[in-house]
Length: 284
Picture 1 (tube, rainbow, N blue to C red):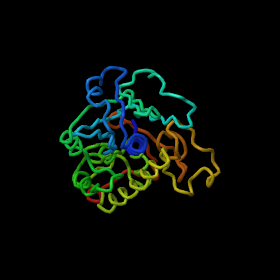
Picture 2 (picture 1 turned 180 degrees about the vertical axis):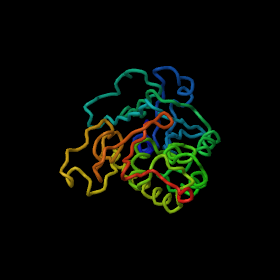
Picture 3 (picture 1 turned 90 degrees about the horizontal axis):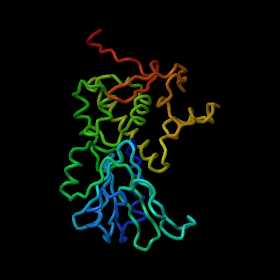
Picture 4 (picture 1 turned 60 degrees about the vertical axis):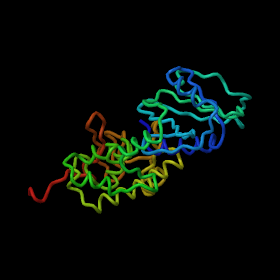
């Protein structure tokens, strides 16, 4: 599933390519046809992301709410320099197509969990159910701490709960816990507030880097392939990471084999030496 940096990157791209311009809106697949007809010819004012939710503003209290889910894609194409003279016919199951009115750019949305026409009030209701987003300047990390600091649930579960923290997926979860030497099964309420604030600040920086680069890179300079004299990571997700999808491979820091376990239907990844199991002093 795309993580929050992907949605923020997409929001910027939609705003850059279509912002302030009239767009043709259609639904080649047909499942968004009625709403597309109501939006066709509108001006796209801009787009914003909250966590894994994207909202494209088409004015007059109309937003297209998109959640890509596990399999969705939203690909934007600017024809300038592409070699294409005109927008090509849609290929595959295109839920929504945006075409700049001058015919010089288009975007195709395929396979989303959500593609819905909503009002401002409906958008605000979605945002209200969403935890703070490290990529938004208006985010309040203390809202997330209020949930984490009193919860008996594993921190690995809490970080993936979009009502607690918005935009973090399986990659950022695995990597932020490794970077802060926290075992993924440690109960949230056993963390200190200082640990949480350090994790938040780290997420802010890492996810902002992801928006700029389009990849998730989490290793520190001393653990890059060049610094360690190791081959670059080969994975369809891209980026250099410590533990994500590295089961059985040696930890870049201590050399112990990376471990995995299923939690809530998703794989956890961690190093048992760098992220030891938590033992409460009260129970000692």
